[in-house]
Length: 309
Ligand SMILES: Nc1ncnc2c1ncn2[C@@H]1O[C@H](COP(=O)(O)OP(=O)(O)OP(=O)(O)O)[C@@H](O)[C@H]1O
Ligand SMILES: [Mg+2]
View 1 (cartoon, helix red, strand yellow):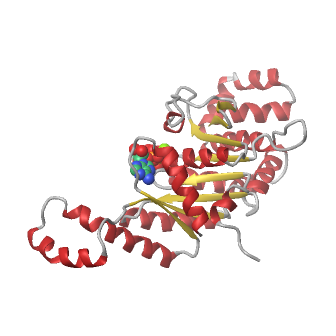
View 2 (cartoon, rainbow, N blue to C red):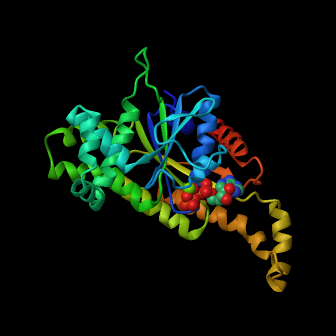
View 3 (spheres, protein in one colour):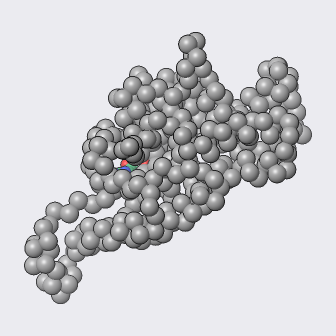
């Protein structure tokens, strides 16, 4: 039996968390994967996590908007979008427990309850978690999922682990009742390797690769299935091995401006080799690309890499 290619596998999931340290390309990669999903006819929803519905969203920028809608809707043909907000999720949760939107809004307008919900970080995560669950549950008239694939542009490493670790943590405190039921249902998507995966975006440099290995370890600890690593911004090497050998010693002697660029592809290969030593997961390499048309070029590169393996 042949194993699924890693990217084909990604498009078969219901929920994928795009994680990684700041600035490595999580948002660009989320946008590129959504573009690829749209090309393949997968009903995709992209989400980022926000504190305020008015916050600017770099993910939305890739599609020509300043922010993603508060409730999931089509943003470009074939791609839906939504910002996951703690408050929207808390309202949805109260609505499902109290079975009334009016009561939920009334409850949330109480100052005391609002202060309580925004004080505990777990309450915030619970809101985000519940809104995500609502999108995963949503069905079309024919019973098929409204959002076949939910791609989430996660904010930062620590936040990812708080979200993936949330069910374990809260279920110990509240093992029964509606919160526990929602957490277990969320876990049934996120922690099932057939339905959920985290992909770690990294770049081939020393610190980011070390942080990527730590994040993989952390995700593993929280029981989150991991799809693999998207190694972004791999510099193309314009030199052959013979050219490198010939240039090596004069460059070392003179150390001119630009010598860093000469060394970069070699350092990148070394860091990718170090990552391969540290994990058996799939590593998909994505090249450094020019900025104009970045997202569709990234989608093309991912498609080629996904077919090459
Ligand atoms: N393969 C690539 N080639 C060239 N530039 C890239 C590539 N991938 C991402 N970039 C650029 O790198 C920068 C950071 O990318 P992006 O915003 O996607 O990262 P991020 O991980 O979401 O960052 P943040 O932590 O700020 O959310 C952007 O300017 C983006 O255009
Ligand atoms: Mg981003």
